[in-house]
Amino acid sequence: MQLTSILTLLGAATVAVGQTSNVTTGALGDARPVRNNPVGETWVATFDSAAVKGTVTAVAHTVGINYTIDVTGLAAEKGPYKYHVHLRAVPASGNCTETLGHLDSYVRGDTPPCEKSMPQTCEVGDLSGKYGTVAGPDVKKEFNDPYTALNKIQLGYIGDRAIVFHDAGGARIACATLMKVKDTCGGGH
Ligand SMILES: *[C@@H]1O[C@H](CO)[C@@H](O)[C@H](O)[C@H]1NC(C)=O
Ligand SMILES: *[C@@H]1O[C@H](CO)[C@@H](O)[C@H](O)[C@H]1NC(C)=O
Ligand SMILES: *[C@@H]1O[C@H](CO)[C@@H](O)[C@H](O)[C@H]1NC(C)=O
Ligand SMILES: [Cu+2]
Image 1 (tube, rainbow, N blue to C red):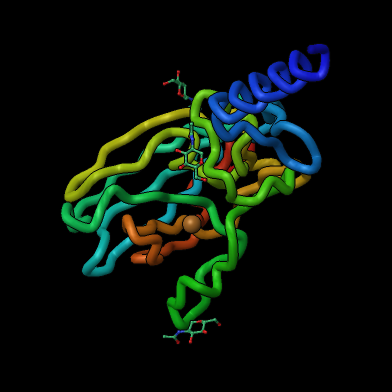
Image 2 (cartoon, rainbow, N blue to C red):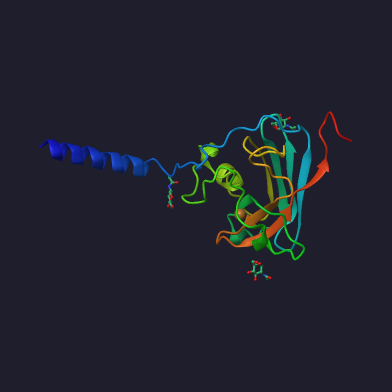
């Protein structure tokens, strides 16, 4: 009887965990909000291919980064599209595979897919995992991500890395390197 109860409890616990979604966290814990960014500093990834045209703009905010996705041309039937910050800049060849994997400063990995309601548990570079995939053909989307950085000493630094769009099948349909276009509001030149 006691054993049965324990088994019943264990069973219930397993079901509960199964239903609680895919919340997992990085080997280094949950991502921490970035509060020492150079506010106003702006980086832009410019897309100009048949698959995607437009920009993804990243502006350093007092907490994290404000992103604006402003693109056109995404084939509606191949979406929804994912978009991420990948580790490396796009090489001269334009080969998106060579941007390597996602920026994953807290070492989470991309499986299971992350739980949007707990963005701190997502891979830092998994922007669509945190803020939603986008549908074609035209996208205009703004969000603040507290966990990415434009301060080089921080985990989650995105400078000189690539933004990559993936179609519904996961193919890397376009990639572009984030380039600095503006210094901070107060300082710089
Ligand atoms: C958890 O991940 C699996 C695939 O790994 C997916 O099928 C399932 O929908 C996810 N559950 C939630 C709640 O996100
Ligand atoms: C970031 O976005 C918030 C909300 O829209 C806005 O209030 C803030 O001014 C933006 N920060 C910068 C540096 O643009
Ligand atoms: C792109 O790079 C990957 C990895 O280096 C390589 O396997 C692949 O053949 C390259 N693709 C093209 C079209 O050159
Ligand atoms: Cu990606």
